Every structure is written in structure tokens, then in C-alpha cells.
Length: 113
Length: 116
Image (cartoon, rainbow over all chains, first blue to last red; front, side, top):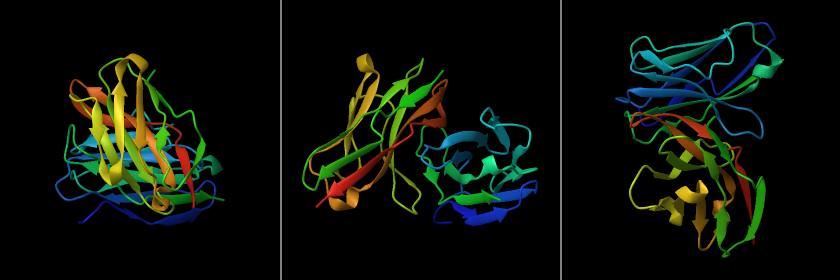
């Protein structure tokens, strides 16, 4: 695609529910990143994929958060038992690989009520 | 631990005036440094990056930044600000995995307002 696509753009869910956020990277980009941006803050790193494998998942806050990228392209961020503190904009970015520019999607705004 | 500090939360400048946004970082190895801009409702857009070489880096939209290792700084500058530059600006350090770029650590951002 022309850019990084994230769906849905907005998601409202009830506390305790499970949500999935999808990221379609730019075609051919091997690296994919997930970030979380809370109001008034800079993006906070969650997880980084190189191909199908998670090269660095040190930013995932707890075991309620999980991400997959089974075919090395589309990635899904999964959040179990959502809490109000999970409300934020979740950003996805992709790049061709090491040392190249990462392109960001528009983000998914998650609101947990 | 790696960190990025943007000391100014909000800056207001007059249109046509010069601009400098400050960024200080803490990182043990040779840093990869970036400036991104985020306009309301828009995604993050890369303005410029420093990987190695010349410490004065030119970016898009007339922006430049200078890497000063002795001061652990990477300040963003523009000689003449336009009203369309009003946005939030983020400085970031890229993790260096043995020469390969990994994830980014962002500062909290500086919001720029431009007076007519």
C-alpha cells in the first residue's frame, strides 16, 4: 500500500473486554514497530518485529499485551482484559530494515470505558 | 537507561522569527537521532535524522539540527517559522543493535504555536 494502514481508526470498548488492533505495513517493509501514545506524552515503544519474529518486546507493559506477525507482513496487537489505563493512541510504524526511515500510520485511538 | 529530554513543553514564536527546539539524550553508545513532527489528526512525519558523519543535518521544510556529542544534544532549528509549522515536535533516539537501528525512544514533545 501507499502508507502504513491501521484499523480501526477508533475503538471504544468496555473494561475487561478483549481487543485487536491491526497494522498493514508498507509493502516490502521487513521491520514493524508498535508504540503507544498517551495524552500529552511522546510515543512509548511496545514491540519491534523483524520479519515474523519479535526482535524486541521489552516495551510490552504486562502479559495482557501480545502482538503477532505470522507472515511477516500484517501485524495484530492484542490486549486482553482491557483496563481504563490502556486508553491511548496505538501507533504502528514500518521500515525497510536497519538504518532506514520508519513510516508511521495514523494510529488507532483506543478508549476503554 | 536511555532517555530523551525535551525541556520545553510549549513554545510560541512569531511568524518569520527563528526557532530552536531543544533536545538532550542519554544513551551509552553512538546514537541514532531523529526529529518528528505531528500535526493534529496526522501521523508522525520524519523531519530529519542523524546516523553518522556531518553533525549538521538538513531536513525537510527548511529544518536543520546539529548533533553535539559533548553536550548530548540534538537541537532543531529553523531560520524563519511559517504559520503551517505549528504542530508538536518530537525528538527521538534510535536504539543501536550493533549498527542496526531498532526501536525509538521519544521525548515528551514540544508544542509549537505560531503568532501571526
